[in-house]
Image 1 (tube, one colour):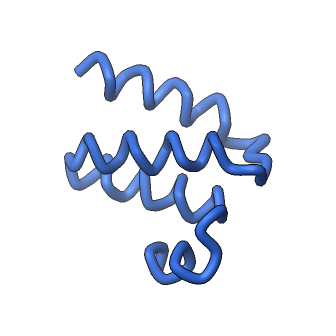
Image 2 (cartoon, one colour):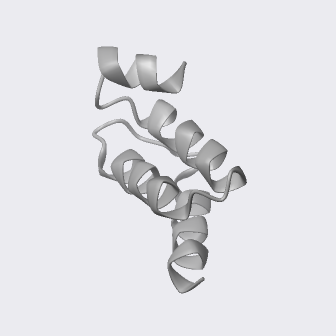
Length: 63
């Protein structure tokens, strides 16, 4: 569903973030990092998850 949402609206930060969380759970680290970075780069604001995503990105890049 997230990939379909992103196909329709490529700059949909919430879908990138949710896909990043899913990929992280599946231990697909590189893909997860890409999705989180795209979520943060989006024009859409993520006030409730921006800091959380940055923290997770830091952890993923250090692992």
